[in-house]
Length: 498
Image (cartoon, rainbow, N blue to C red; front, side, top):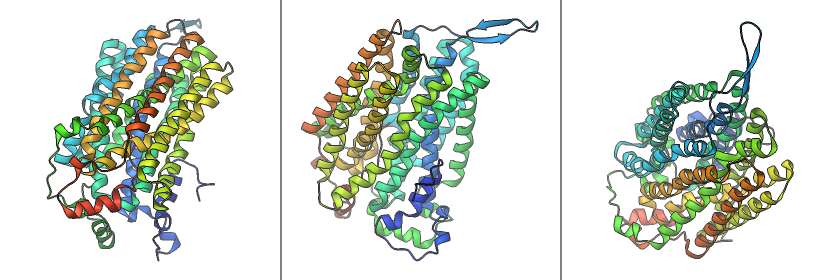
């Protein structure tokens, strides 16, 4: 279906429009109405979530290319025709690492807060405000950076703080809007916006920096994000019954398909049991190990390509986006494959999680190690492209495992897990900054070896201690919800940890 429809967003609509057939439901709608996805409000929510996650990663990764341009010399022509070389900043590797990691100081601080705010005030307002404020702060980046690098550090921390509430709050919307049998497909489509955002932002940022200067990178992504957040707040509602444009048929379908929409039940989180659960700690440890390798590549790949292979800013941004093209494809494969393996009784939910998480982490460790031994740019790029492609299997499964083991506590549990994972975003660029002091290939190889060790550690931890079984402390007294766990919980492969 998607073979000839690869433009950003078009294939998303194809997948959503055909989801009824994919999920085994027939439809009597005329063919031309099947593509009117906005008529089904949960599909519209999915598409807007796709665009939201696109913007979130655009706002996050723009600095990976921007920092290269900010610290690179360029030529300017004076009024008298003289061409002189100028460089706006000359930060050393340690300061660059601090700047790249500063976002995660704020991001990890607001994960649990985002889950709580979403449960208390609704996912719509928390998500919309989070994206909107992050976008506005991004627009301020050039002006404040020219004043002081420490203002840039403060700004990035605040951006991380506001973006950190978005993902946990989105889990609240999923619980209200998406029937269990549609979770794998629709949420995989939504979260593919993360990789699509990276795919397009890295090369676009490189081109903007080369043509218009590095400030344009932040003006463009920030302005788009502000516009998006306004549309989100106008269109999206917290619950299906609050949407005046939803059809009675779709509302009944959502209500009848999931008992999780009973908002009168107030969830009480068993904090002591959560923090003393071996399964929770195994998940958090795996999340941290997986995030270390991902954030290392996400933040450092453009710099690595410039230091070792002398890629210019535009070319480096394009090449750095290639791994995420593969990840975009594997996101959708992961969701569908995981659901099929379970529904066909080929593997249990726990076996699927261990295969996807431990298997992909082992493969990534091997590819990262191989990349450190290769000397040609095509060989290194190929290893990194394949490695990040396999990362989609781990990301989707690590994220959804929160819902596997504690469905009613998934938003808060995800906040805890993503807080731990975000620590990797703080420390990995800092460590790289202390290791790579003279831009040599040998020093970059050490960075890759460290990531490989973390990948292997995560694979072993989850392989030994991970599970997809609902934990005893997470079992609710409500019989209706217990039934929902059995019928809908194990089929989910839909959440992504970022």
